[in-house]
Structures are given as structure tokens and as C-alpha cells.
Image (cartoon, one colour):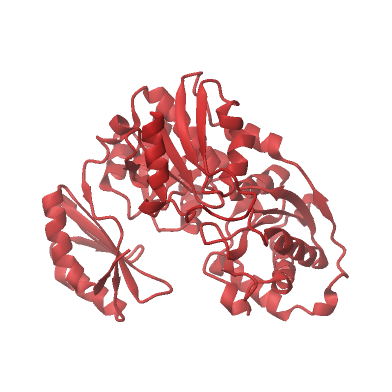
Length: 469
């Protein structure tokens, strides 16, 4: 059963088969044992380093899985600080705010309501992935003696951290009383709890802010639409409401509110790479020279805007494990991914939908012009978006791609393969393998739409059968 629920970066599966309370107890025990050992190995011996933060989302089974997980953690000898119903980034905050050994959020993020899982972090909210602890947790969970149930010395303490969390998130928000109207689609997920608690009911906590609430009721543990803002069809209601309300822009959060997407005042979707370029340049103007990290699928405009603003662009691998590491390694002030994850040095290098909302509100208020006019000069190149191709011999296709362009483009293997002929021909692309399916994922950008179409037509046949969304 354990093999079915452990993924590369978290633990996730359908409930109650294969993920259930019995498995949650085992995973809790394995997690508690690992986080205590990790803290001890780092020489962290303070009393707080016996504590593990646990939060949960609003899914129907999250509370019972949380209870079983906490029992497993305490049976492993660790203490639990239960912060209750919350967004995932609040767990990252709590780990750092309380200086704990780590934390777990019970959530399945943007997956449908029949799914659930656990996002595990260690000290300083550093992510736990397959290579950084999940394999060990799985081993601990598999080997646990179930007679240990009820024999642990750990305790559970419930704590309300909303006041401290609100203060932290709003330290990034300074709209100076300017009137801003925003439509927020909470996807019936955790943003429906977080936004009112942090920003006030309908924005009442921020002078000049008016929030139009869309799908904020998460009491039933169901979603009115898939809580994944990366899928354009999930943004249709938000787009229509932004236009009808004559709002300044709109925001859609995913299920656990660690990601967001923005649409402009006309309802047009703002690319997360273009938003990264805008916010990166804003941070650099505000705080001075620094590094800005971005995932390698992002537009060339990100590198150009960061450089123009006096910053150092850091091109990195896709995924929060790599992005957080890039921020730490380069002392970067900010980072962004195409997936809608945004990372902040002032937020322990962690991603946060709440902090991203604060920063977007502040930066737009300071810009003093519509979102569409902010983004237009940044969105200067033509993009394919991510295109999927079904193919069994993924490595063979990548090898053929490299062979075809090796003498006319720069090629690197940082994450998948990137073929860069932008300076010479005005185009570049990245092709990455799916970890779980016989798929290749293509992102291609060109200086104009005509060249984009030509290059897609040239490269796509090499990658297999196109997969329609």
C-alpha cells in the first residue's frame, strides 16, 4: 500500500483506498521518527525541536487522517502542534515562527475531493522529497511495529496562529490606501478560509481594498470546479466576474492556496512567467541588486527584465524543491514558476499564495496603471504554452532533437533538454519527460507568432502524437 501513495515530492492518493487512517498512522510514525533524527543530526537539540506542526485542509476526510497522523507522530516520540484548518503556506510559516523540527499539511492540493495526502517539510520549512527524506519516511513507515500504537511519549497541543500569520503576510502588503477592486476565486478551497482571516471579510482589513468573493464556501469539502488554476477552463467564471464587476484584476487560488493565477481587468490570463518578470523587477527596484530565480520554461522576457532592473537572473529546474534551493544558494530575493508558485526570501524562501497576493496588490498599487498595460510590454514574445506528446521512446526523441539542432543552437540538460537558438534565429524550446507517463512536454517561444508556428510544425512531429487537453 505504501508504494501506491508515495510520490516524488509528497504523499497523495485516493481515500480510503489506498490511503486511509491505518496508513496515516504508519506515515505519521515514520515522519515523526525521521524529523526527530534529522533535527538531531543537524545538532538541533532545543525543546522546540521535538515539535512537529500539523495543519489540514477542508476535505471531508482530512480531519480523520490528521488525527491518525498525529497519533503516529506522538507514538514516535515527537510532539504535535496542531494549527487546525489552514492553507499549506501557513504550515511553512508555523515551522519557522515556532522553530520546530518540521511540519505536515494534510492536503491533496489541486486534486479532486476523493484524493488526500501529506505535504511534509523539515526544519526551516525545507521540502521533503524522495531524495531528501521521503524514501526514509517510507522505510520507517513500512518497518514500524504496530504494537507501538498508544505507547509514545509525545503530546498534542492545539494552537491558533492566525494573528501571527496575518501580521507576517501583511508585512508584504502596502497599498497606501489606494482603491483596488479584486475578484478572488477560492475554488471552494483553503483560500476561502485564508483570505478573510488575513485580508478581512471582503478586503476590510486593507484600507481601499474591495474583494469580490467567488466560491469561498469550503464547508462541504467539495469543489465547484477543479481547484487547478493552470487549466484555463477553470478560470472562466473568474474572468467573466472580473469584467462584469469592472475589477482591477482577478486571482484564482488552487485547493491548498499555495499557488495562484492572475487575470487582468479584461479577463485575460496573465502568464506566471510574465508576472514573475514584473514582480522580480519590482523587488529589485525596491530592495536593490539581488538575484531572481525562475523556472527554465519561462519566457526570455524574465531574464531580460531582471537584467534590465539590475538583478541577476537565476534559471533553475522545475519544482519547489529546486526553486527553494536556488533561492537559498543564490540569496535570491524572489522566485517564480509557470505553475503559479511564487517564492520569497522574506518568507523563509518558501512559496505562498497569501504573500504573493500581498505583493501583487502592493506592486499594482504602486504601478498606478491597469494590469494589462503592466504586462503588455513584458509579454512581447509568442509562446506555445505547454504541449504534451505521447511517445514510448522518450529518450530516443530527445536524442534526435539534440542531433538535429546541435550545430545551430545552444543545448543544455539542466531539466530535460533546452535547445536555444534565440540570439541567432529568434526561438528556443524546452522538452521534458513526464515522470509517470509516456509523455514529452514541449514549451516553445519565438520572437513572433509566424516563427512560433513554423518551429512548432518543425519540432512537434519529432516528439510523438499530440495529446489534446
